[in-house]
Image (cartoon, rainbow, N blue to C red):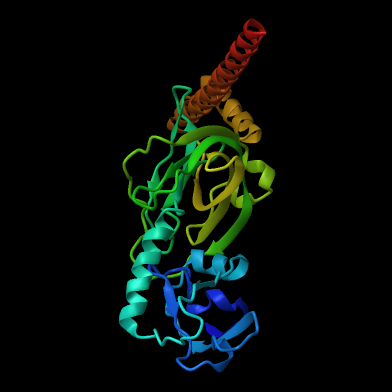
Length: 341
C-alpha cells in the first residue's frame, strides 16, 4: 500500500497530519506519518490549503482466505486523514516523534470507539425432521472451509434459513440498535473443488446474548438456484458455497437500512431409501409372483417393496404435516388481522 501525499487540506487544521487505514486480515489499524520536512505544509504560507507529503510504502502480509478474496474483489480500503488545529500559525512545530504519535493515537482510538459498533450475522439452516418440525441441521468443521463449517443437508427435504443479528460485545459504545429484519435471501452459488489447507478450521464461537438482537426464519427452496449440487448428493471433493443476504432496519443512531452478507458452505447427502416408479413397479411384480415361487429372492423383493412403500408414505405424511402447519399459521394470522381490524 503506497500513500504519496494528501492535497487540498485546510491549512489551519494541518498540524500533525497522519493517516490510518484498516486492511482485511489485520486486527490493528495501520498508521502512516508524513515526511518530517514538508515545505508545502509550512504555516508561513498564505495559501488557505496545503499539501502534506507522505511518500510511504508498506508491505502487508495477511492469511489467504475466502474473506480476503471477496475483499479484494468487491471491497475498498478507506484511508483516513487526521489533522490538528494549529495553536500558533507563526510556529512550525516538529511533532513527528514516535512518542507523540502514540499518545495521539491512543486518544483518537478512545474517541473512535464512541462512534464504532460491530454486528454479527448468525445463520442456521433448518430441516424438516420425522416429527414434522424444523430443526437445525448438523454443521461439521472442515480444514479447507473458513466460513464456520459445512451444513449437512438431506436430499429431498424441506429447508428454512434462520438468521440472527447481534451486536458484538466490547466492540464500541455507539448505540447501534437493530429494530427488525426486512428481508433474507440466498444466492451467488459457487461450486469449488476441495483443496488441501494447512490452516486450522475457523469456527465461530458463541458469545453472550445482547439485549438488542433480532432474528427471523424464512423458507428456502434450493431448486430455484438451478444448481445440481443443491438438489442431489454432491461429490466429496466439491464444496458448494452460498451467500446469505440480510437487510436490517436500524432504529438507532438513525433510521436506516443496513445490508449484511455471510458466506456459508453446504453439503447435500443422499436422500431416503425411496425407489423410482420403475423400480417400484418391478418390485411389485416380483412380490406378486412370490405366491407361486417361494424363494429367498422373492421374500427379499417383498421386504424391499414394503420398505419403499413405507418410505413414500412417510415423506407424504411429513409433507401433509408441513402443509397443515403452514395453513394453520396462515389462518391464525388472518384471524388476528381480522380481530385487530
